Length: 205
Image 1 (cartoon, rainbow, N blue to C red):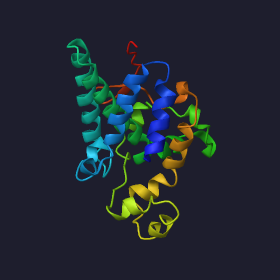
Image 2: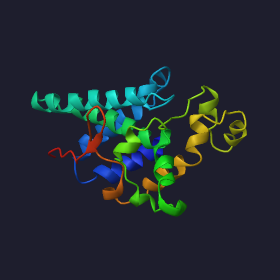
Image 3: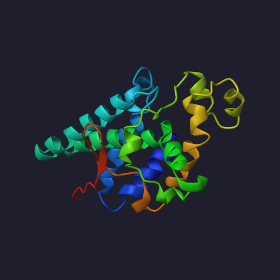
């Protein structure tokens, strides 16, 4: 997902819930998940290349870091873990076909507004049909270059992340990013083996 979209979603979800200092740190950690060293072979950080279970495990790992860090007086470490967690959670919806599967289940082919999408449908979270695109570097990165990126799209396989983001789920997720905070992708995730749930994380200013 593009950096600007990640940043916008963080502001929409967390403005007013955490201090400006905490939010800045969380956004920084969120953005770093897209650093080049986190793109090569780290599919679980982005739910790429069908690394669904790996992504779930990474969310659980980051969440497990938050409370101990806060209780030991290391808020920056907690904010960093939370920032990394939110990035991967956001990528889940834009890098996988979750939204496509959800809309396909709606009666009579109806496509409800983005705000009505259920982000925690147990059946879909555990569906064998849940898939994600492949990065196909470096072409995948080149396809996002403004003005010229579209010329690389024709070189990308149909299962590439770039093609998925520019159509289907990606379009809907970008619409979600423009919604009110209450409609945003969840602020914090609690992961068990088979379910994602969420609740707001409040940090004192």
